[in-house]
Length: 282
Image (cartoon, rainbow, N blue to C red; front, side):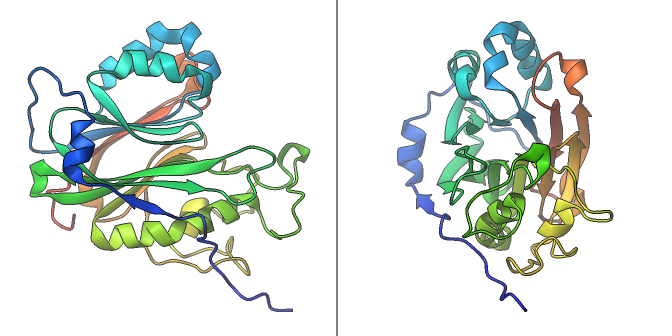
């Protein structure tokens, strides 16, 4: 029996905000400076329960990586410690269920939209979802960047855990990604889209990848949701943590990853990459 393809996007909602109002809530640094050229994005599934005990390590990572945008998952019980380190240099511009996005307060980025993308039915009993923010990069003539902080679901059957809901007949991973892709497609049409996430890319069939799913190839989405030609590329990865983005490869440079063992804590280590929206094809 052929199962009609469908995209579950009921959870997608952009909440437009007035730029001036968004900026009024941001505590600016004493000497805000808009710098041209590339900016740095750090992605980290940080394991909030371990943050407080490892505050010194956390402070060292944030200081040494000097990222302009910090994307975190599983902040949980560590949210207060993280805020105590990042404020006032950064502002928390988007958050949902421990998926947080922080932006440096130097007037480079204007917040033009925020989003919360809940995952219908949850994920194996957990409330997971994605947060997003649309940013206007004042150092590249106002080009738009859309950043998603996501924690995709563990696949059905991983560790013996199976989604009990009869409404969803395919993998939790695909369900969550299908619910998000409509918005990512729209973002990619208007600017550059980045998904910084714990992809939980485990137990996949040979030759498959979640990045292939995102760029419309592969068969993970067969019979469940429509494929997409949004054109995502893998920028950096460590373990299951990745940054993937749209646009020309020339936008991205100096990607590197640090393993969990090298950091000393954190679910999967972290990934950093440089992005330059002023490059051709941005």
